[in-house]
Structures are given as structure tokens and as C-alpha cells.
Image 1: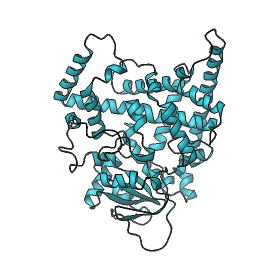
Image 2: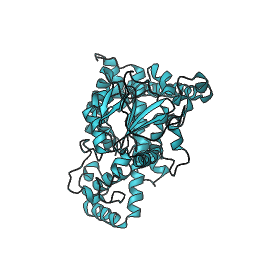
Image 3: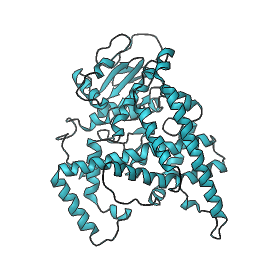
Image 4: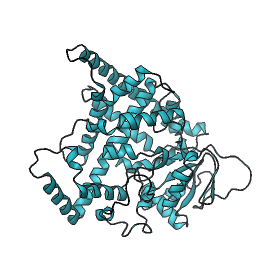
Length: 435
């Protein structure tokens, strides 16, 4: 699953380094070697998944709350406890509210390819977040998306979720949709893959032999060309509809691309919504929506198959609440209480992003009594937190009933359960709507 590969983003981040002066009390962590730092600890490990390796390293080196690593030239702090997550995402939220720019992706970003995910914290970020919550991802707009059809799990499930996203965002009549979805998948591989040049960004020789930046720029141009085609077709359909007796499309019937284009035309914003930003926002929605939703649904089905008791309860509820209904609507889903518990427990055991998207420390801070220098990349290990036996009874078992009392929810305040993140740059609203 691609969502499980997201942790490899940590191998693509460069630290600009903090200010000098005085000996810092860095968080504890594993031993480091010259040049490569802590990279050797990720070789010949039991699991190829970075979030599992980091959880093991934190336990072995007595640093479960906060651990410090150096990967090449990258300074990395990993929060693996609810207390540390709260420090990063609430107590010091402002200092950790920006995303680091991946070196191999920087040339594309500097050409305006910045959406909500990697926009620096500031006026543009606030504007994009406000628009995404109030307009793009409102409950009304999500409910207006056309429903998908039932299919088998696995590849078909991934195709279905991508299809639903396509319909909601750019309309399903885009005639290069398959090419567009393949480009999105290729972009996911590039972002989550290993690039030596990102570990040693100051070395031109390493960057040259790595070649990742060149591949990213080629893909960036291709994706923006496809977006130009989608926008052109969208505007042609809009003009054709405006010439019919029924007139133009009403605002409430717009797809997301139509909404963004209208905001772009109307202007009047604090920070202009350029066409490059419009395209980047659309790519954000695709990159964050389809595959993560598919992986969560696939994990839920897998856990139900491995736990017959939970499967029987879920089936009994569905038969009881939906008996005699020829079709299922979103309103019907509100009555499936146990199914909601299944989704929560699935997200606890299999978070959308096992390592939440990285943050960058923009000023020197003390976290859990340790120094975190400016420029340090910070990751929150949501997988380790959600499987910590100190906070969860029988932590590795699939037990949807643990959420029955309703005390723990997605609201980003219970830091032992943060499948979507928390604080200013959490993905709660978006991912919860997609599921």
C-alpha cells in the first residue's frame, strides 16, 4: 500500500541547521556514524517499513517519547507518544506549522507548484485552508458527489476510490483521465521513493547521479499539461451549457475544479489564486484522497475477515438497518453505529499515514525538555502511538467495541488517536469526509 510508503518521505528532507552557540541537549537516539549518520540502523532490519523500525529504535534506545536521528545531513526528531505529539501539534504548534520542502521537489515548487499540503505557513496557507474547509470540502459538496458502484476489493477498490475522486474534482468526462491517474501514481512513487540526493542536498555530484529532481520536473510538466487539458475541456463544457435554455451551472452544482476556477476569475483575495495554485490544489486532492481511502477500506475488510465475531456484528447491523432498502444513501450510513466503530478501530491499527506528514521546526524550541534546533524535520509516529500498550488495552487486537463509550474521536484532541494528525495542519476534515 502506498500509504505505508509515505514514511520514506523522511529520507527526502534536508535540514538547514539551527543557530550556533552552546551545547544542545538533543533528544536521545541511536548511535551515528560519520557522513551517513543513523542510516545504518535502517539496513537489514526485520521490517522494511520505516514507522516500525523507528518504533523499535525508540524502544531499544530508551527514547519512546521523542527520538533524534540524523540521516545523512538530515536532522530528524520523531515523536512516538501522545505527550510528545501534544507538544509538537498543540503546545508548540506555531513553530511546527510549516512543511519542509523536499530538495528534489524544490525546483517544481519554486515554479508555483505549491498547494495546501506544502504551502508555507502564512497568508497563502490560511487562505487555502479556509477555502478548502468552507468550500471545497463542505458537507454539502461531499454529499453532492456522484456515488460509486460496488466492486471487488484490492485493485478494483483502489480504482473505485480514484474514480469517485475524479468525478467530484474534475468531472468524469475528462478524456485523458487514465493518463492523468497514471501520472498521479507515478508521482506517488517519486515522492515516497528513496533519493540519495535528498540526503546530501549540498553535494552536486550526488544530486547529479541521483537524477530524481530531473524526473520530478518532467513529471511536473506532464501533470500540469494534463491539468491544462482538463481545464480547457471543463471550460468548453461550461460555455456549451451556458448557451442552452437551462443556462449556466448553478454554484451548488459545481464540481471542485469549477469552484476553484470561479474563485480564480472573481479575484479579490488577499493572495491571488493563480492557475498554478489551482492545479496544485487539484493534485493535492487526488494524491491525498483516492489511495488512502482505498487502503483504509481494504484494511477494514481484511480485519473483519480475520475477526468473525466483528464480521457477524457488522453484518447483523447492516441487515437490520437497511433491510428492504433498494439502495443505500449517505443518510442511511448515520444509523450504522457499529460500522463506525469498525472504521475507527481500523484507523487505530492502520493509520492513513503511519508517520504523519513531516513538519519543520522554524525556530529553536524545547520539547519534552530537549532542544529541537531550527530546521529540524519532525515526524509523529501515529502507528507507534496507536499501538502503545500503555494507552490501549490489548493494543494489537482488533476490538471495535473499545470506542463504544464515545470518549475518543477524530477531533484531534485525543493524542493517543490521531489518524489524521492534529493542530493547524491536520487532515481530519479531508480524510474523514473521504471515508
